[in-house]
Image (cartoon, rainbow, N blue to C red; front, top):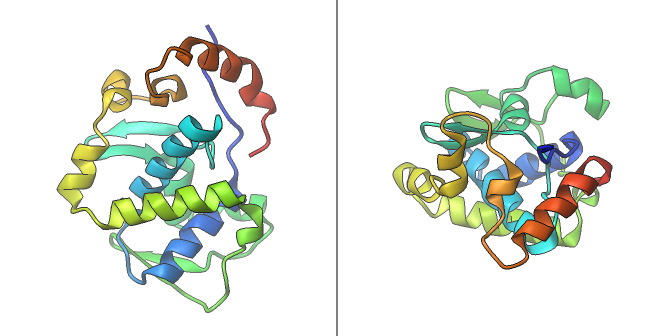
Length: 177
């Protein structure tokens, strides 16, 4: 049985991180990564697709969207994909801060993406690290057993879950995020 995988959208990830940093300067990496997880999971359940399509790893402190983590750490790998020579932020220890006054490119995000990101960010930043960690240790995190998480496990339980999983297995590689 094929695992559900999406093509990661670095442009959406950059826009989301940039927007969060414009909303709240000096936020920590844990807050950003959990906001992206909340947004992706909520959007998947509500609209049938994630926002970012990142690969998630279940870590001790909760799910980590691996490609978004790389971008937050300013890994140069994604700059070529973005057609850029630098990120508009830097990571100092665990704190992210803006390095320029540019506006985030929200045109790459749909209205539902923006709403989910804003909700995920509000939820994440309103919690302590321990609260965020506990809130992200759900059945999807547990099923991964500190390995790769599956989008199948991020879907809420419902009578339509089996159909939704089958549809996503078929369509995910072709969905443009």
